[in-house]
Each structure stands twice: as structure tokens, then as C-alpha cells.
Length: 362
Ligand code: UD1
Ligand code: UDP
Image (cartoon, rainbow, N blue to C red):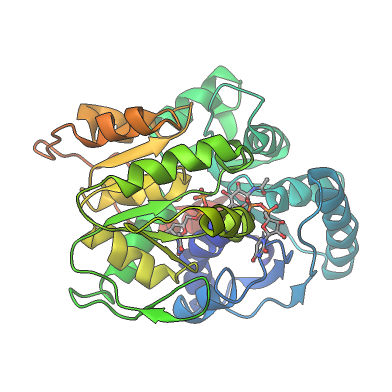
């Protein structure tokens, strides 16, 4: 069975890695990877292909930046051309980025079955660009793979249960699989935004922040950084390229002595930071789950619950992008007693592949 996998952004490389590893070993599959180019810096793309041993994409479309419409439109044109040439039996899409949406629109109109991994996540607001991508992709897909019971509930409400399967979270597969390569010693130095190397402290908080909703308004950025500045330990902050320009501008007029602004790190280093951080502050869908996997307290600076299963017992709490709210949430005592794992058994990829075989292999 020939499968075309479409990826383009950092979190998609991680999810695709756990499936591609199995495709490579199973002669019933021939996987062709299209990288849209949405993420292209070597620390946002190449490092994941190297560390996670993802097969080299046959196509790299080199499409990135610009408005949502321009990026998505250019991707649709190129994906359609390639898929017409490759004639796959099915398309595999991950998550909720513009690369996902482009793949969904281009290929659903070619009447090729689409499987969507990480289906069913809903925030309940169309003001979030990824919500639009998720809903459209789920509705045009033929097979939906949900990570959690709450995602299945959303799919049921939208009448999509017939094509949905609860398989667990491939991010949890990846976390378990690659954690074995990450010990207690820091694997590498951090790289500051000016390119100089710096040692990761033994005790630290881990911050990531890249959502359009938090980065587009400077006041929100300042509040988040001011909160990090008043923490009792340094805060390691790998800055996503979306807001590195704004961060440099802010730092030219203010001194943040407690915040270590560094370049994006690879996946293994991110796992190290997650496992060794005091607490985690993020707006990332992936990192808030990884915090839960690692039993670390997390504060998610966002207005909407993305992963309700992590929100029990204050283990992951929402905070407004306001210094006082972030510090208040971080100061709460949280335990991981009675911990359960709502993200599957770390074999989501095997389940997905078994279902694909049953449904589509002839
Ligand atoms: C995208 C996804 C978001 C996901 C995030 C993961 C959409 C709508 N958003 O957001 O859901 O959580 O990826 O990180 O698809 N840039 C670089 N170098 C890179 C990558 C991006 O400079 O390697 C720049 C782009 O040129 C652009 C900006 O960063 O100006 C934002 O990139 P974009 O891909 O549009 O959105 P993300 O914020 O990365
Ligand atoms: N991550 C990484 N390097 C970093 C920051 C994050 O490898 O500098 C990893 C993180 O561990 C998680 C994934 O990137 O696995 C999440 O991606 P991102 O936050 O970009 O996207 P989201 O999950 O919000 O869509």
C-alpha cells in the first residue's frame, strides 16, 4: 500500500517519526514523505529528521511564512500535483497546522482516503486558526485516530464517530521511546540568540511560547517574561522563530537577568529539559502533554483547554498572559499521586498501522 505522508511543522515530525519507523520495516507499506517546508530552520526541521531517524522526504516544497491563505494555497497547488503523479492508496495527515489543512483540501478532492492522526481535539472557538484546520481535516478524512477519550467525545458530537478510533497519543509513544536516549546528564549546551554557547543550569524552569494569540501582542509577551524574571530559579526559554524578532527587540530595552533566551533545541534536549525542569510554562499543545507524561507541574498560558485530561488536580492549569496569574498558578502545590495515563499505552502507532491494514490493504 502506497502512503503519502504530509508534514511541515516541528510537532508533526515527532508524530510521524513513530509511524515511519514501523512503515520502514513493513514491506506491505511504501511511504512517500512530502515536507511542505513550513518549518525550515535546521533547528526546527533537520534536527528532528536526524535525531528521530525519520526517512528523508522525497519532496520538500519549500513553502513557508506569509499569510495563512498564501501559505495554504501554495501548498495545495504543489500537493495536488505530486499526489496526481504518485497515485497513492492513501494520505496520512498529522495534527492541525496549515500543512495539515493543505493536505486535506488538496487530496480530499482527488477522492483519495485520508487518515488523520490526532483527530478530535477541539477548543470550542473558531478564533484559533488551528481549530479551523482541525475541524475541516476531520470532516474530509476517511479515518480518524483520536489520542484521548475527550477527543472521541468531540467526534461523536460532530457525527464522526463511525470513522473514529481511540488509539492513544503518538506523542506519548515518542516520549517513551526516545526518553530512553535521554539520561540525567544534560546532553548539550544551549545556544543563545547571539550564537554563543551557554551551560544549562541544574535547576531551572522551562518556558516555551509561540502561539499567535500570545506573541502578536507585546503586552502579553512582557507579562510572561516579567513573570519568569521573578521566579526563584532561572528560566530556560528556547525562542520559537515566530517571536525571536520581537524578543530581541524587547531585550534591547530591558534586562532579563533570570531568563535564558536560547535558540530552539532538538527533541532530545527538549525531553531533557522537560524531565529536569522544576515546572513548565508553555502555550504548546505538545509540551503541556509532555509535562504530564513526565509528571511535571505545568501552567499553560492560553484561554482554552486543549487537553482536558492533563487538567486534573491542577497538574496543568490555564493562566491568562498576566504576570500575577502566571505566578499565582505556579505557586500552587501539585501532586502526581493517583496518576493515571489517559494518553494510551505508548503503542498508538502500532494500533494505527493495524487499523490501516485492516481497512485499506488489499
Ligand atoms: C505552526 C502551526 C502551529 C504549531 C506550530 C508548531 C499553523 C497555523 N500553525 O505555527 O499550530 O503549534 O507551527 O511550532 O500552521 N519561521 C522561521 N523558521 C522556521 C519556521 C518558521 O523563521 O523554521 C517563521 C515563519 O517564516 C513565519 C513564523 O516563523 O514568519 C511563523 O511560522 P508559521 O509556520 O507560520 O507558524 P508557527 O507559529 O510556526
Ligand atoms: N520542542 C523542541 N524544541 C524546542 C521546543 C519544543 O523539540 O525548542 C518540542 C516539544 O518537546 C514538543 C514539540 O516540540 O515535543 C511541540 O512543538 P510546538 O510547541 O512547536 O507545537 P505544538 O505542539 O504547540 O503544536
